[in-house]
Length: 341
Image (cartoon, rainbow, N blue to C red; front, side, top):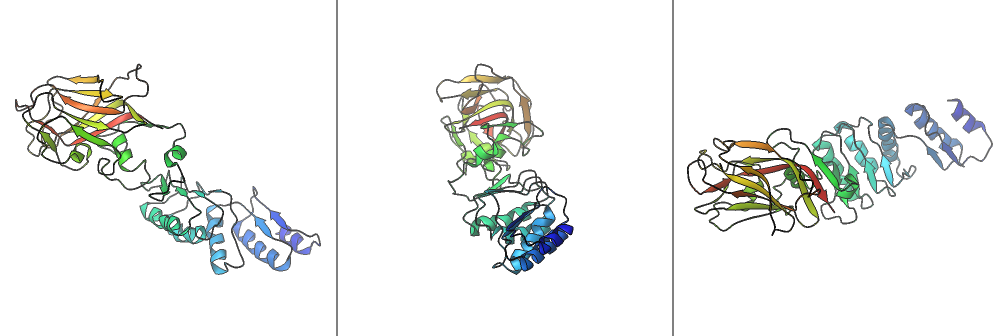
């Protein structure tokens, strides 16, 4: 309060008042800013820290008189860890719509859900200067919000500077695996089957395919089948410049009646689609038992291939649980280190 009295009383030609990194209450900041701007025409700017309350109050002031107030923020506006909730999201949006300098917003480690994230997406639709809004550490699915076809920002490189993402198995077909990560485009949008969205390519050996290949990497209870052939396989290609060093993988049986489950097969990896390395061999493995049953197996690291494989495939080597050559698969997930260029 004494500071504001001094500002009003002094005859010095003050132009900028900077009270960042202090413990000034928001109410006093706003009240004093309004009074100082009214009574000291020479003052062009007042700088103060962005707490949650300051963000909301600044939004209110700008919304009430957009011609009078303008928020000049740095290229990265950091409001992480400010306890911003869905209730605050409309005010935050109204403020961000008026920003003309900032290109990135850091809203990590707040209390936003998918509802708040959806509101924030309207900022990207309306304000071209903002390229990305980081939302990791909130209660929403997305770790960062970007325009779907915006090529100005390498989102994954921003989120994961080491170009490596580590995944630890928790439960069968959880949201902590690489296939789920790819299905959300690196946690930047709601989940979609990664084969349907083009994040991976699924192929198979010759044979009659009962359903679409997308079922091989899907999360729904749908199966893909190859009949009457020996040594058949399904392959997942992560694409050029991407590879996986697997530490665990999960399969789902692809039949609703539980018959014809895999018993003898290999998990293999390749960097070029020509030479294949057997990562794990299964002989008379009863892991998949019952309709749409799932099972996870831990894998040993291969030090000779530190960055893993661009392609992984499940290759049947013997008869199934019904003593037939049919191969059914209804889901695939993998954990470990994911590398990208």
